[in-house]
Length: 451
Image (cartoon, rainbow, N blue to C red; front, side, top):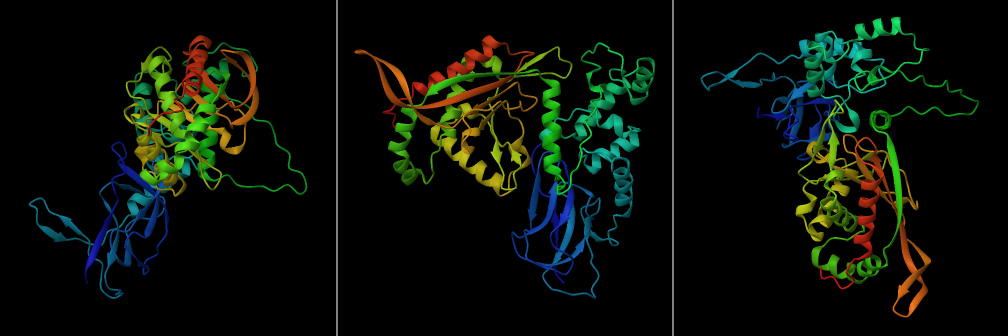
């Protein structure tokens, strides 16, 4: 009986393992090529794994909740459906010969992961089995684990975050849960006390009790929504948010796009939206004001000035959740390249086909609230970035324009731009000047520009 091992695919340079969240196929099921066999989760993104072969699924090597290393087999397919013949996975011996091994078991892995899961089952945050296992082995209690700031998608705590925390914990740079309990004993919560960058993570926020009335419907948050919620609360806690607004006359942009969009689609087989135009103007403004393209390190004593300009574009998903795919090195792409990148990432985001590397590494984020008919918004910063720009809907309005013959009132296409920025490192002068520069580039759009 011909057997094929299905291995965990490579999902990005920084992703070394994935958690099996759901088996789509059961043992004995027939699987076609490119048909989804399993759903997985990493510290960065959830995705599906298609089968590279066609045949019958005869053996699952891991259970739901188990962690699988990239490149390791997690299932075995057979080209024939046979129940009596044993499954014989293969491994390579030290001298390169292929030898038969005993049937693969994952009881030890499952037992370890189950024990780790039990330590964090009451947490409102999502922690991968790998992270929970490390926490268990290192004696990090749940309350302390929840205080670690994550660098993964929507603030998710990654393996690197835990290892970095352990290093600081060993050297005494962070307070353990035991230390916090001693501090809280000496300083009651009701007492007003000063906070520093090292102690802000120990401040507990008391949530109000929420009454439930007759007829109310209780809807359980899915895992992605919980992660988004945690990330938003974390961002507001980390960064003092300030939002500035400008009004931009984008008449030239509207007229130009209407003039070229059919020709553009025919030639490039791509629809051009306003998003790549916005991104091009944002990139130009970032080059004029590079200190908007920075991050603050976790000690809040250093500013990291980013070399690359990687623009995240907030994308609404069909289930109502939000994801932010990233256009890497956006300053190296022309308008055609930006259009193709925007369309590709948005489409694959809606189809849940993004790779982990495609939603990380952003240095600045754009969110288009105008897609929903909103005139403006006050977006929350996507950590560890320091600014996010929102574009509102474009509306026709009467406006005063200056001409050689004097001031005149004309119908113009007007939109609001809003910029939320981290007031720790971005003052009103920088934030306001950057936002105005984006509007200037939009207003100065060449109506005769060739594509």
